Amino acid sequence: MQIVDRDREQLEEENRLEGKRKKLVEGLIIAVAATVFFFLANLMNGKVSAFGEPYLVMLGNVEVRPGRTSIQDLADEGYGFSDIGGRRAVQNGKDISFEYSELYDLSAKADGNTVYTSIILVKDGQCAALVSAVNRKSTEIPLAECKVGSICICGDYYEAESTALEGVGFGGLTVEALAEVLGKPERESESGDSYKWKRGGYYLVVEYREDGTLDNFRSECSKFYGRK
Image 1 (cartoon, rainbow, N blue to C red):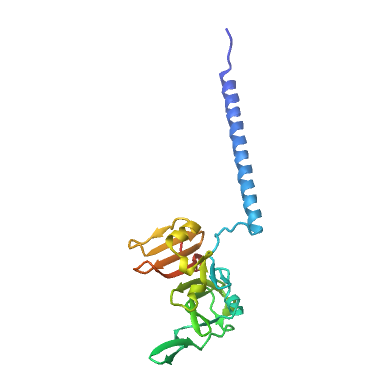
Image 2 (tube, one colour):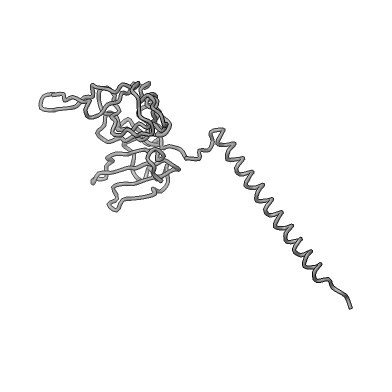
């Protein structure tokens, strides 16, 4: 009759299982480390963004990327900045139009951790877009150094027809055309006149009139507004 050492067998079995668990954990650590290294390497090379990529708006040949484009970048392209208080009425026969003749001094200080909304982007005295300017630093900086937090283009804005969104011209910004480029929208209003896309920390909202024609679109960087 064979004598079996049950305690020894149990100890060997536990050691064997512990060895497997140890190898599994080591393998997982190596896999995670490799993934993190790959991500960081690509991030440093500009191939990956932990926050996603902003929705690109083109004003003719001028690029606007919310969260990255600065107020100075647009000023360098010949744009000015104003608000409703900086416009004046111009009489042309029976018609009245508005021109923005009073522009912001871009050397003026912007408060820390502040978002300035309803800023008129001015070109040739006309409203080209509605933008926000953001200072995410805790200290004051010149307005010129603020980032563009959002940009909105309406159909009746100056040179709206020459604008484009993600490579699609204003006149062709149908839901179907955008879905081909951006995929299915994240949210659609019950009335079917407003659609929203989200890419990382960036948002895009496109709104249509009752007749189905484009009313406006807005590209925005959410980290400036605390949205999730």
